[in-house]
Image 1 (cartoon, rainbow over the protein chains, first blue to last red):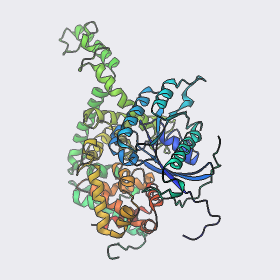
Image 2: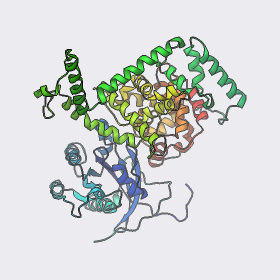
Image 3: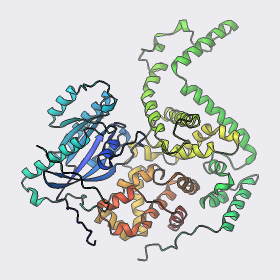
Image 4: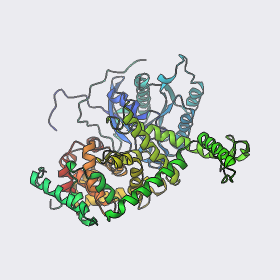
Length: 212
Length: 368
């Protein structure tokens, strides 16, 4: 490849993240809002996991997230392991107005504990908060569940665009921390199989996300 | 590179050719007994849009219409009334069933005849009580399917959301959505082993669109019934891809995906190695959707219809032709794929660029 001026800062760290959750809880909408900042309430059903990438900067470190947005319907469940088996993080999504979809999250967590990386970083999105009228959204049960499995819980709305940057940057921060603490450290960061850090699409450089 | 097919850029066929193809197709269709092999051969090259014969051609290709034209009217009437009976049996809700039974009960009392086993309101048994958990309770069956019906409803609402025919506030779009829903619910109830799988809506949509737009009003009005039977026919050669139990078998989706791999390896070994070994792009990552949805999410609607003319013309069901088209899709972008890495290749194949469909089909046809 020729030199493209100006050279984008090449992410030195990349992570693989998988979105899991029941059908129609808004996984695709969530990730499209995050990556492209768009929303459609007529999003077609996902029958095949979509692959997206997003660059961000956390605490001055450029990061590349490669994201698998999986199909939610039970029928496609059997094809799931290929997407989460070597994932660094899982974002579990449920529909805040539908308790059954929360139960599905707990099932996914059980499956991840058995099949995925031992130290996979998990976060739970209580999505579709725009559908809840009352100002106070009760997430006590979900929050204590999240705590019990070492996950973080965020209330999100892909439609309103709330909570989404927060949840992804929380995941990225925890991933980075883990990588720093691990024996190989940042300098030895080796890209995992199947993750490459070249992206031929021009992407806006996101503002640095460094607080706290 | 002897393995990579070289082909001229796809030029549109000259008008004379288009006209002669159209007249040959019309001639083939007007025979008393239609020669299906001839029809397949002609339709495989695409049914001209102007000829207004696509609904008939597709019904013939799917075996819904028989080759002997003299049988059509009777056969259609039979099927359409059979479908009306399915609707009656599977779509009426328990309240209506109960009310109807009550009315019929009264009627039979008045007429002094026996009641055909239908219950009077006063005789509602434990078994038919809405809170009964008995397996035969109409209510139990109703609740069991309400979840599937809800899913079908939501997926139908997001089928081709960009097309007025399927979506929007017009009563036309609403009635079309209603038809799609009815068909999928009846299919789910008749096929308890598969029921409804997301994506079936996408496969049904082109059939219903073509039949609903039949210039013959009577046929257009029966588009729902006709689409139902053609949908069943189409899935019968194809349903294994939707069956989770068969996912990892030779006939399930994994088997189909390895057939695609082998086909690519046969015609373009370099490309297959680069894709699957060098850049580790597993065919499941992109071709799963190509195959299970018969390419309905990869191209614009007019192009899908054109591709389906060819798919439906395959006498052995759509799969072999479909795999050749998938292989041709890879070959057409091989230059970009060969310089691409995992990310760029996967993004390219998950968002396949607009393509000259005649050329695509031409290349696919060379892979015999």
